[in-house]
Amino acid sequence: MKPGSVLPCFPNTTRGVGTPLKTDPKRNLVIYALDRTVVIREIVPSEGRPIHAQLYTQHGYPVTAVAMSPSGSFVASGDTSGVVRIWACDNPDQILKLETPMLGGKVLDLAWSGDGQRVVAVGEGRESFAKVIMWDSGNTVGDMPGHSKKINSVAFKPSRPFRIATGGEDTRVNFYSGPPFKLNGTLKSHDRFVNCVRYSPDGSRIVSAGSDMVVAVYDGAEGALTLEKKVHAGSVYSSEWSPDGTQVATASADKTVKVFEASTLDTISSVTFGTSVSEMQVGCVWAAAGILSYSLGGSFSLVEPVTGQILSTQVGHNRNIATLAWAEQAGRLLSGSFADLGDGASLTGVVRCWDLSTGMAAPFSGAPHGNRVLKIGVLADGAAVSAGLDNSLLVSCVSPPAHGARIALPGCPKDMGVGSAVIAVVTTDDKLVLATKDKTTAELKLEHEPTCVAVAPSDALLAVGSSDHNVRLLDLAGKVRATLAQHKGSISCVAFSADSSRVASGCANKEIVVWDAVACAPLVTGLSGFHTTRISCLVFSPAGLLASGGVDGAVFVWDGKAVKHKMPLAHAGGVSALAFLSGGGTLASAGLDACIKTWTI
Image 1 (cartoon, rainbow, N blue to C red):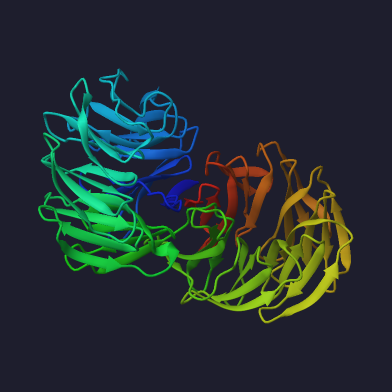
Image 2 (image 1 turned 45 degrees about the vertical axis):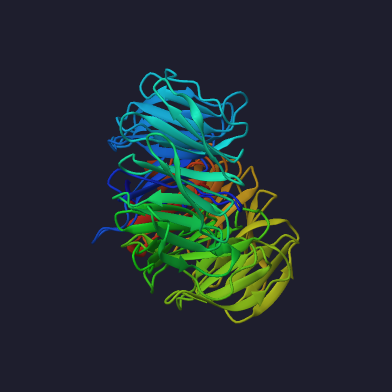
């Protein structure tokens, strides 16, 4: 099994807080983090292949700051524990160069010196909010006092004499000279939090932006304030220089991205993204292809700097992916998750339709689920069906992606399975609900606590897993045909083969059993001890291979009792969904890392 493409997670968002984005020296890549995963990805796909992405998952705590060295060979990444790791991004093994604790709290921003020899980290702390080290030894090269609250942003002058500018929640923009670095003074006090400070590419100027809606420009060598102006109607979360250092782009909570002439702060272009809270722009980078802006709702937008035209919009997931499904007729991969605008309250279901040839996703139009998407399935006629924790089913068109009819459920769903035309849902109140894409057709009270369900492609049989360690085969009338007893733990997932002759079950006791669905007898047993934790998902290929994913992050492909393929660390945090693509030669997996990966079998 060989790794294929990676559809990376999108950055985290939190309302009222900017999302840090960085780029590489050539400005072709965007660099960010979600939870413990650092993502380095192309901004636009190259012709003839999907977007290339690199993931780094070696941090023990959520990553909160990233920066690439001027050479493009190393990345510094900092996490919530205050640890900074410096690692080789140009080596497939991602060799660790240095790991050192730098702050007593969360690292909020990082910057490299122009010669690539020094790294400065800022953020939260107990005694110090900033620290500069030599990149290879970790030796400290200066004391950086001057802030009374956490520092949100830092910029390193790219040319000698070296200078460092910082901006913090104490509203100050401070200026340091060195090495060794010492406080030279406060350049300006914004009226509110300072969210971003950046040096121009030639080091001649500094720009700062804050929650007071003001952008200020300073001399890069001496730190003197040269210009300031209120330019937005909301907090300015990010400011970035153009490659030639003559213009500045800003992203704001007023849902706009603006470009200014750096010498006057006169507006060159402005684009408004909408009126909803999700359209707040919380981060941006000035890339070779244009200005890449990121919204609170989790969308990347590429903006043309001169005209302000939105060239393209990219969507994905920045919360754990719960389900995958392959839509054969449309040739698209469907994924389901949720979004909450970073406030943990405004939950909406998210379904994406992926074109694997480009690695780009399309959103579904129409009213989405009002809560998390639990499961997606595709019927024989190509219609997609999703079950959400808003107690409903949504029947959707895949090409073009659009949500359609909504079917109310009598309770909160635990799992959903689909056959050719039959939909089955088990609920938290121990009911089995049968439906078509038009309406519910039956509602049955079960005598056991169901945990999962699958429908045979023939629509003749249902498999219901239970917390009593048994799998029950039912007909469409709800009559129990057989009780399959072999497991020693609660059943966590069930799946039918493409010809409906076999059913596989996985349990919390890390065991997989393959059953003869006709004879109601075990065909393959003894598949235990391979996964180290609960089996989370099972899927059969059209040719009859079985793939399993677990909370341990591993993916196995089985041919009978034999392990045909194994990927032990497929997803950080665990594998949540699997789907075989057209022909069964490619397997897609998704996990709690909000990433989707493909594997060539």
